[in-house]
Length: 115
Image (cartoon, rainbow, N blue to C red):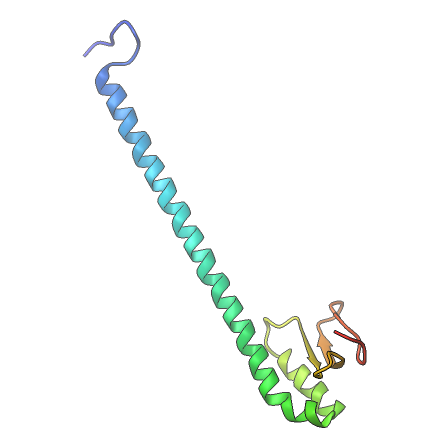
């Protein structure tokens, strides 16, 4: 069918419109799936961090209550055995740091200072 005096034929316009709608819907779907994946991975990372923190708190409770510096440092070092942990800090009820272990160059606090 020949093009009319104003440019593209109606068939070409409909085809281009449908193609644009399909591409837009694919783009929106891909964006939504990427966002959902990101949210799921972020949730898993937060959950893992909370689990490591709870386990460290549970296992080190006796050493913290007894204020045993050797055991608290050992618990903090054991927490660093996990590749995802950057630092571990154990504090008492008043917020004073009892033990801190960190990867080189990432020390967040000093022992005896408030957290």
